[in-house]
Length: 110
Image 1: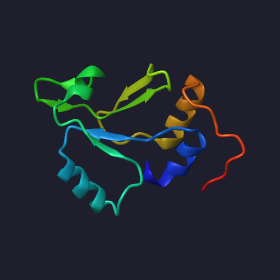
Image 2: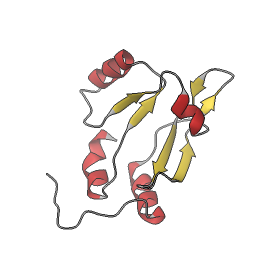
Image 3: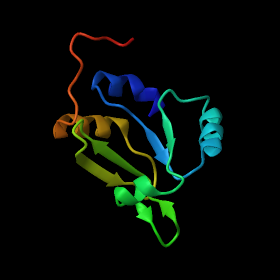
């Protein structure tokens, strides 16, 4: 996602990374990638994962997924990834199709 963050910004979308890992794990992961410019949030107590139906209780882990939430807090889209990573082009198309965001008018990349 980091390589395409400007594309998400143009759609007025906020990218967040959320996992059940601890903050130190997030810091180490981000450092291994050379850093990321989007927030990484720890769901160490699994509340967010459970709320979005992504907690795999048997193993006490969260499924890898993309959740698109609109400004009113409504879930507009969920996709679980068993293998691989989400395709940014597909996610941008879903953002546009769901109407969850609107492109910023008159703004270029800052």
